[in-house]
Image 1 (cartoon, helix red, strand yellow):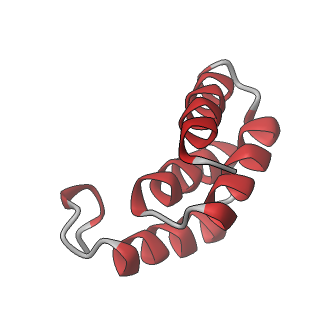
Image 2 (cartoon, one colour):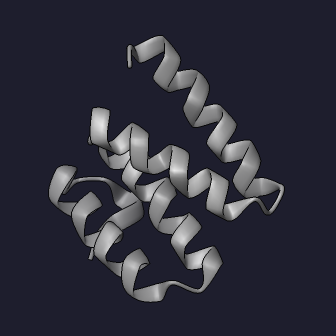
Image 3 (spheres, one colour):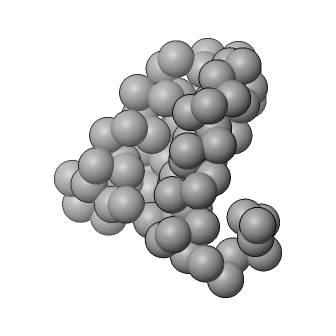
Amino acid sequence: MDKDTAKTEARRAKRLRESGELDAALEIYDALIEAFPVGALVFERANTHFDCGEYGKAIRDYDYCHELDPHDPDVLI
């Protein structure tokens, strides 16, 4: 997956999450993170897990996001 495709897919995942299609959004985030493991994507997946009530997965992703980008103010622990 190239970066332009990834950006398009990230926007699509965000729209899906906002419209309540959480499983579809998670599938996209999983593929994106496999290709580009960056904090912003992991953070969005964590939020989506949280929205699903998958709190353990959300916490793991927030921790992973912090490992990837320890200075991100959204995930400071």
